[in-house]
Every structure is written in C-alpha cells, then in structure tokens.
Amino acid sequence: MIRFSLICDHEHEFEAWFRSNDDFDIQKKRGFVDCTSCGSHKVEKALMAPAVSTGRKQEKIALAMGEAQKQALAQLKAMAEKVRENADYVGDKFAEEARKIHFGETDARGIYGEATVDEAKSLAEDGVEFMPIPSFPEDRN
Image 1 (tube, rainbow, N blue to C red):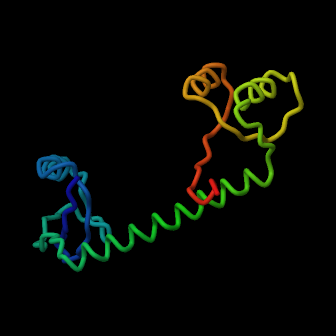
Image 2: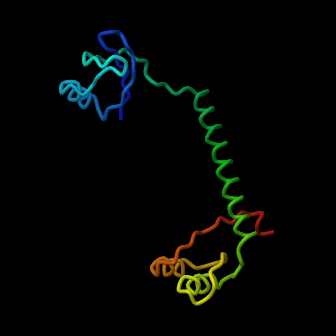
Image 3: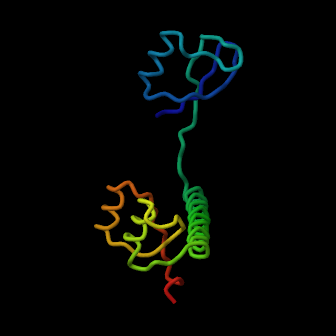
C-alpha cells in the first residue's frame, strides 16, 4: 500500500491509500478519486517528503514498542493470576478433567493444570474449549 498526498483543483489537500501507482491512475481515470472536501474529481498527486526513519525516531518507536510489550505482559500476568485464584488446579490430570466437564460427566467448573502437546491436540479434536495460560519464572518459586 502507498499513501499519496493529493490536491484538488480547489487546492484542498488530503491523503489516500492505493495498492500501487498504477492503481491510483486507474481509479482516477474511472472517476473514483475525488476530493474529500468538495468532491471534485480533478485531483492530482501533491509533492510529499519521503518518510525517512531517523535514529531518534527509531528510538521512540522502540521505546513505545517496549512499553506496549510491558503492558501486554502485565495483562497476561493478571489474567493468569485470575485463573489461578478462581479455578481448581488439577495438575497433570487436566486433559482428563477437561474432557469429563465437556461431556457432562462432572459439574462444570474452571480448572487449570498441565497437558502434553498430544493431549492438547486430542482435546481440540474432541471440541473441548481450553486455552493455555502463560507461566512466568516468578510463578515457579
């Protein structure tokens, strides 16, 4: 996708996205490109500066991404803690207990525990809904 700065014959400036330069030309020729302010179909590409990524900009992006990762990690930790507080730990019997709950052989309740990859695949094939919860180093103390 390419973002173009555009300008109409009434000097209204706006931006639009296109798959390619040819896509812009085709849409303009067919009358699909119009000014967002006045509706004029007399639209041309405006001069625009290329987006250059500076070292400072890259640092800001990295910091923002780092902060987003910290927030996501905090949310995952909170979710895992909530599960541990509100569900029964069934250890390595997770697959067996989940299947019993799914097929109505025991009362429905929240559970968590461990399952092998093969057990998880088998549960999924049986239509048992489950979700892995993350484990963090501090959880192992």
